Length: 187
Length: 379
Image 1 (cartoon, rainbow over the protein chains, first blue to last red):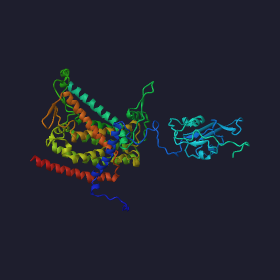
Image 2: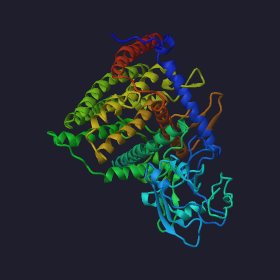
Image 3: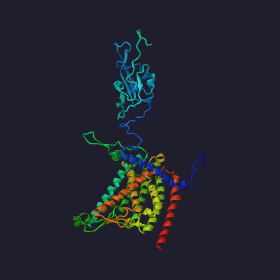
Image 4: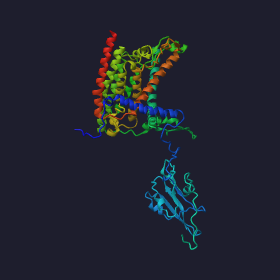
């Protein structure tokens, strides 16, 4: 005995005659076809999808976590102090930082020689942005358009992340950090 | 004699190129039409790069068919450890060959008189004329059913000899479904045979060249609209396409009776399916849509119901008739693809119930009504 459901669809004679309802369905899909075809014929786009690498979406949300941005100080050097916090917190372990030592810069002797992100593995969780104590890494709303045939071309290095100018980011160039007090401590 | 041979070879070459062309183009049409129907763009990535340049020809994704064919030719030809190797190897051909053979009796144009096309041809052909049909058989429709019935054997052989349970289940389904719908297919056509009094497809098409009530073209669909609907449904079921694709339902049976086939053997099954779409289109055109006839057109030119007439040279008539036939076939194919991308799949018991308890009685009723009407009008 088949179970009877409370919301079982009831079909009248019209529905059970198959043909009228099938014709109605065909009219719907055929109508969509004719409408879209007419758009293509008249030089417009008759589809909701996008040609992905050639054509990117314009309507990403302002808070979208997309491609990373490395911020700079007023003098143009990267704000990153190579503390490795982002690399530590990263759940996908995609950030690789090689720290360097610059005795000339008293306030920030540590700086990143190499700062690389593997976008083939990045999960875009934004934890690196949260973890950064220096506001050195942010995420723009634009996505990294990196369709490639092999995963090794999906690594982005320090220069790429520094130079990249996100279209939707009004905060770059970034304001200089607050002035230091003479004893070297931050207020 | 040599003239007959030349004409036959030309017709056979034309038929094969038309069928292969349809088989190739329809894979593209199916992709693109499905995409446009569902607000998508469709396959458009395969390209041919002109050597030594960066010019890439995409041509709306037409090369995807070529890429598919190449892929199937180059893939590993996996052979299962089966006890009936011969049946396994021969099954794709048993499916593929009858599909091509059906086209032999379908008239794809009116009458061809080579001497009227080009004067010097009269030296070889005289002033004889040939009906544009490979085999001028008076048993045309019977041949169609005989050959299309053979494909069942191929499907069942494939399923039986693959030594795979999915294949066997698919073959069982294919067998019962195709035999059931073959019956409906035959019964729907019987009404037409009663009206036209012949099974010769060329004669049937000639019967459809006139007009009914002075203005309607005397096409089979005007006499038998109900039978036309049933015929199309049964033919799609014969071809095992959605909504009747139970023998190869992916979610239940992987690929049904050709699960164990790979590379070009599997390609033959797919290609046979696409050519059969064109064959169904050609049959439907011949039986119900007036074949190569345009409305109000005869072998001499146009003759409109008002009395106006436009004479046409023989070459123009031949080209128009062949073009009309191809266009009608293409439109019916496109309609089948529309059905395939609109309707959901039946449940298996519903398929057979639909055949035996719904379509079979309707086809019988249609036949009885037609017989009574023919008897009443005839007497």
